[in-house]
Structure formats: C-alpha cells, structure tokens
Image (cartoon, rainbow over all chains, first blue to last red; front, side, top):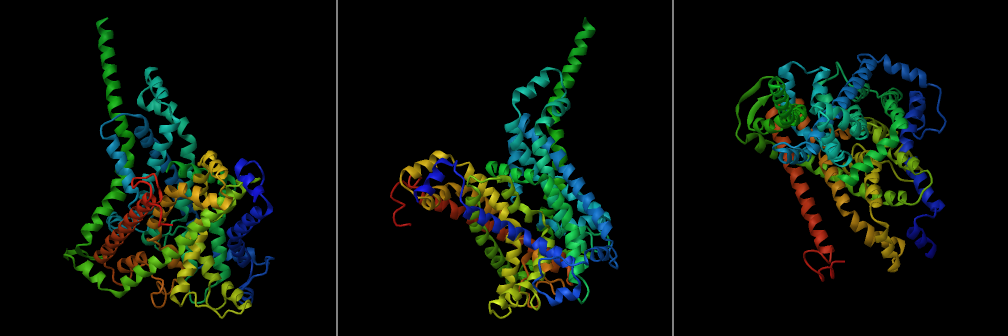
Length: 285
Length: 323
C-alpha cells in the first residue's frame, strides 16, 4: 500500500506491469476486429464457414477477394472511393476555412450582435441535424440533386461545432495587441486576418480538418438516403456488397478492409494530432 | 494640400466601412449555409409534420395533428422507442465505466504515453457501417465467432439477431467498440487538469489510491462526465447505422426487435409508406425525447452535485444520509 501511495504522490515513479497488461488487453480488443476483418478477407467462403473462429495466420485469397470487390456487379467501388475522397476533402477544407473566418470574427472583432449570435450557434450544437432529413430531402429533390454528390457535400460545408472550436482557440491563442498592431500598420481587415489570425489559427484549423475528414468519411445516414445505389460513397457501397441471398463474407470483409484502410493509414500519420485534439477539446468544452 | 486631405478622409471612410462590415462578411458564409441546410430543415420539419405529405406527390393539404396521433398509436413506434433506450443504456453505462477505468490507467506515469493513447483511439477511425458489418459476422446466429466461443465453454447458441436483448447487446457492443477510446481520452484530459495539490492533500489525509479516485478525482470529473453523457445521449438516441447494417434484409429484425426510432423514421419516409408527414412527426417526437432526456440529465446532475457538495448551496449536513 505504501508503495502505491507514493506513486500517486510524486507521479514520477513508473507504474508496474499490471498497468501495462491492462493497456495491452485494451489495445488487443481495439485491434482484433480489424485483424479479424483482414483474416476473413484472406479466406475463402468455405474456410469461413468451416472455422467460425479464424486461425491467426492469414490465408492466401486476399488479392483475389480484393479484386472481386472492384468487379462486383452493379457496383462501382472505385467510383465510391473517389466520391468519398471528394466529399471528405471538400467538406474538411470548407469547414476549416469558414470556421476560422467566423471564429476570428467572434473571438477578436467587435460588432453588434456578437454575443447573441455566438450563443445561438452554441445552442444549436445541441440540436441533432439528422432530424431535419425530411425537408432536406424534399429540397434536394426540388433542386434535382438527389443521387448527386453535391447533395451530400453542401449540408456539410459548415459546422457549428467548428465555429465554436475556432472561436475558443483564437480567443486564447491570438492577443488583441497583434490584431490592433496590424490595423495600425495599415492592414485592411482581410490582410490582418491573413497575416495575423491565419498563422495563429493553423494548428486548431488542421485538427478541425482532420476531425471533419473522419466524420465525412464515415457518415452513412444522409448519403444512404439521398444518393441511393447509383452513385454511392464508401459506406453506402458497403451496404451494396451485402445484398443478395447468400452473404459472401470474404467479399464483404474485403470491402470493409478497403474502405477502412485509408483512414487507418491516415491515423498512423496524424493519430497523435487526433489524440491531442480530443484532449484539448475536452479541457475547453 | 486640400487634395491630400480629401484623399485621407476617403481612405479613412473606406477603412471604417471595412471595420464595420468585415466581421459580418466573415460570419456570413457560415450563417448562410447553415440557415439553408441546418436551421430551415429543422423548422420546416415542424411544418411538414402537420401536413399530408407524400414523398412522390408532395403536399396534399393540412393534416392537423393526425400524423402525431397516428404514429403514437402504432405499437411499432413504442417498440422502437423501447429498443432505442435499451441499446442506449447498454452502450452508454458500461462505456462510461470502462472509459473512467481506462482513463485512470492511462493517467499513470507511463512509458510511450502517445502510443497507448493512440492505441485506444484506433476504433474511432473505423466507420460505424464497417464496425457493424464486422460485428454482425462475429454475432452471426448460426456460424458466428461469439457463439463458437460460447460453445467452447458449454453455452448453447444465442440468437443474437433473433432475440431482443441479445440483439441489443450486440449493437451496443458495436457502439462501445467505436466510442470507448474516444471518451477515455476526454476523461483522461479532465483527470490531468486536476491539480496534483488536490491529490496530494488527499494522500496526506491518509486516503489510499482507490479512495482518492472515488472521493477526490471522480467528483472533480463530474462536469466532464456530464458532458460525455449529454453528447452520447444526443448521438445514442439517434442510432441508425449499426442496427440498420445488422440485418439488411429485414429492417430492424424479424420482429422489429432492434428497430430504433431513427430507423422507424427512415422506414416511414422512405419505406413502403413514403409518408413525409408522418416521418416528420417521428422526427419531432424524437427531438422532444432527446430534449427531455437532456433536461433530465441536467436536473439530475445538478441535484447530485448540490447534495454531494457539503459547501454548496444547501450548506453542510446535507451529505449525511446520502452515502
């Protein structure tokens, strides 16, 4: 007991092996479903049926299964991939830019209605946007946008959370003196935004870009309603792999693998930023 | 000279105009897009819910409250509401407990901190649809891994898709898989913002590690826990992706045993009924439920904190008899 207490007290001593064991188990639980996906993608239908608990060594059918995904009848998987990239990139860039602009205005500029408008944005964050799908669909149908990518892109071009996030960040990260100094030096408002606010906002804007990217890439509900099977994004395409009477699990799991891999690779590169983004948001929120 | 002065006033004026209008220009893109795609649909949902509105034929006139009375008279709607709450409780309660535990473990002075933190976050980048397809196979009724593992310890196969509670457990597992790590990091951040002085004071007072967590750290985490609960309420009560993917041939199971409210909404609007009016009524009812639960959360949490906190509004003495 005394030893344990000391650890907490000073916070310098390294924890024992039990702590690491707990973490290893947690990470195995996080990773195993993905490895399971990989195992099933590398197996044949017969092997999957024979062994409900797959062996830990992958089988040899991975490439042929992955190829089959791209040749599934009635499904343009490559097209779905391109669609997902387009939606995610455009929405993330747009959310990052517009949130930075609005966040700068809310954090550092004085104008009538500033407090009221900001409170309004924060209040609407609690209202789930999913519930507006019926009119949103009717509007898209009127515009002739159903089945088109633009119907998925436009509603995600801005985010109330994004504006709130950038406002919070910029009110802390950007001193008023800098903005005023730029004005005194004769900068126009936009020039002071570009030369003073933008550099300061970059880390938070980059995180906002990442989180929006993950959200866009993984969203299913609205795309499945408005796109249908003709012009799907990846999550909708995964649903299409599952149709048919006999479920072809090696095909479905190969699709899951292909659609998840890009974000896993992204995670290897920027996972550190995602971690600190979540932790920074938690302290402020 | 005179020319110069005039020039200056013009530029001063321009600059003043710039100062006045720039803020509005900066927030305009957000408000314009958001008003069209966020605010308007929500308000218009309320309007459509009072109309006879067919997906193909459009607005067919006023309906009064008949859409609401129709939906509220459907046993399927109430079943969907029960399912939604059941899945929500099965996913949020174990998730927050696990997240608190993992956060406490991650709060230790670990080697390779970032590695462990990234490790628990991995599931977050897997789409709910993908998570659902993976676990649907694991929880397959006939040849799934879960039943095979249970058979090894002598448990007879469970109808993960066919039966109500098992299907809720399977779907809750998917939600927990994706979100536990995310919430762990939020709680970890809150733990680390607690000053070590507070903890040291508790230790000096003779509290052991476990007691320190229970009586000192957990109460200080309360705002963050409430934040996590409220966000997971808003998300959890709208659950759609996981139960939808769990079985695509029947929508929400053969007996509607894992049909959720959002699936019910989807089915009313885009299923055989094609009834936008009733779908909007379902949306409004779900909104009311979400707001009620959020309000309930707030009241409950503020009551707990005022009861728990002896130096709070109610003064000392309140604490005795509670624990």
